[in-house]
Image (tube, rainbow, N blue to C red):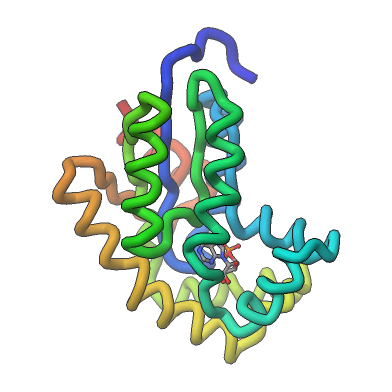
Length: 193
Ligand code: AMP
């Protein structure tokens, strides 16, 4: 972890499936000494280990729907509660207005404030192209065509409205996710305080 980071910092990485959140989250957490919390990775871990949560989540994930808020919030809460100070990079959370409200409350309880919500913008053709590539390379069971289409719709319906929520609070930073990994990463660093 990078030295000298002892103040609370909480960055959200937002964007549709295939926007590059996971790749950028890994780079950013390393560069700023933040713990990466990817709710998708955490859920896939539960599925692999066959926990109760994993068993309940698997069919929801395979359908491209969202796992219920209370399960997700409990998972994030147990991670954030362990940190002092809170220094986290949230990848794929929050995804619903209920999760955003729960995050505000959790951060308030921890005496931390949201640093920024970074939204990666990528056009739809490029998203589909990237997800097809990922399906071939990683074999994720939710990267098939029907599920991808549903995940895009779920994103537009449930998660996109959160961009307004953070914009109204002065926290939204929009970054083009269309360039190379390095270019996008430089842009993200450029919009963070
Ligand atoms: P991701 O890796 O972020 O694309 O997440 C993969 C899948 O996990 C999603 O399609 C959802 O089914 C589930 N998931 C991940 N994060 C959340 C969240 N914050 N709220 C609800 N479901 C989630």
